[in-house]
Length: 254
Figure (spheres, rainbow, N blue to C red):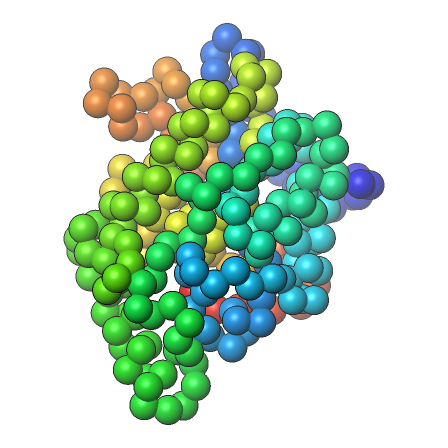
């Protein structure tokens, strides 16, 4: 893949990372997948509906990949779901010597009985589903043990996402693999970022995730506390200039 002026500017906009392998510092570029037709229509995809990117989503993935092209990314990981893995494949095309990994631990939140439902149409079923979806989301902002009927709680999502992240950092990455791209999904990314940055998954409501949003977080093992918390710091959250500058729309967050 080609390195453009845009990608060079994005790389230059980020603070430098101390990359001495002995220090063990890592920079993670966490992306949400590109748009799907279900995003556009307000249908809940969640964990159980493996919907491909639409043409707009493929363009978004291309734009995000171009934005990241000048960075020394050595690992590209993603959820097992097609919308995330195809977005990650676009990033990987610019970093062909990177490791390409797939882990279902980065898959979207299981929304249980709400999966497959439409939340955007103007009928009573959709309005009822939207109220239920929003109520559980609000409950999650108060209690990380709140969850969707037949689906996952915030704590369950965070536990598997952090397990997948730890496995990636400890087992899949060499000491030289300082720059890592992970492509996930709207809700899991928000919950994971809230857990890493604030040590509190219920804070996810403050974090936006547009389609192919790029969030950059740094890990420093020297800052981890005795109880295992800490170590993560925010560099940038929900960067979407690569799509917004081109007038690309962003779809629903389900």
